[in-house]
Length: 149
Image (cartoon, rainbow, N blue to C red; front, side, top):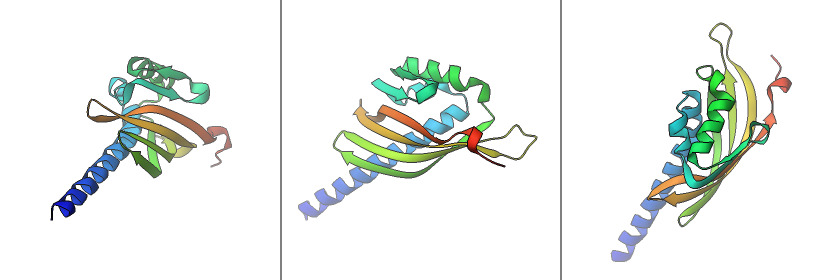
């Protein structure tokens, strides 16, 4: 019976880890859309990196928060990030993942429109008992200039 309980406990830990990482991926977009840049930066480990091509790159929670406030601050309240197809692999206190993201925008006057589609490649670490981004690399597959009405 002890072996069964241990196996069940291990499965529960794995499911909990997967859910916490999925929540981290969703919080990333939500905090950006809501302009909560300090909370956004706190999603990253002390040595966390964010690499977003032409938008920039930053290391550490404070630098990441500042970069994103500068890069998307004017869009707050007009965009929404959708996260799809997350694939997460756990490796003890580390994990890797990839997902697809879609950003749509609305000025409140016109119907919402897709402005970008891309992919993230992530590395996570468990830091102080919480999952954090160790590295997030975003790639744009479909920028606004290629989206047709």
